[in-house]
Length: 234
Image 1: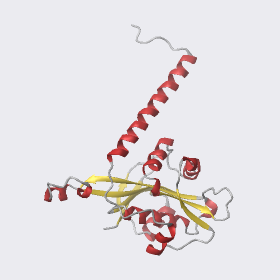
Image 2: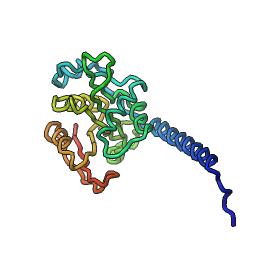
Image 3: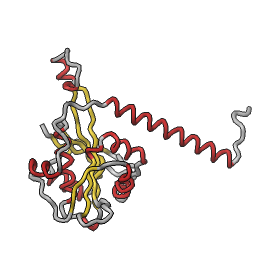
Image 4: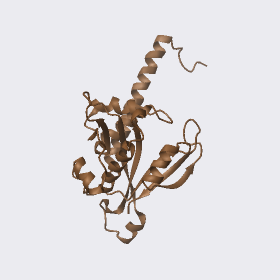
């Protein structure tokens, strides 16, 4: 019984390209649909300048480094270039776009002040997840807005060029992102990091106050274990 006609190499390549294109469209539609479903609570974040954020949280400035917001997709390649160097597993461009298109205000870049091309040497990329608060909903059956939801921030990517590490840039990026997620209504911040990444563990646990919430066995594609860490804000 013939199940399918034989595919010549040229036809197979064309078929594969068509399948990939179709998969990309589906993924993009799923990202857009999920983005529309997430409604954030009324936010106290009104586009504070970096100076205002620093003053409110005593975040020290780093001499020679400017902290700027992600603006548009012209900066996408720079973000991907930074993050991909230290990834435990590869991300597709759609993963970056999911974060950056939905939460551009939660992507902060570190740029040398004397840089002519303003190419970033560090970045943090975050998002916010919303989950129904069943306990609160039971006590208030009439509530239909976002007040009955729990908002959790998530640090998805944090990267600094090797030659600029150990100068406080990673800590400063994380603090700025945490401040913004707190202003946007988050009760806590989550992330995952490899158990073997001692530098990341020192940053998140010792400097920022995250606690270990769960051990994720063989979490990454390289089969390395991970810790899920959480920082409680309320």
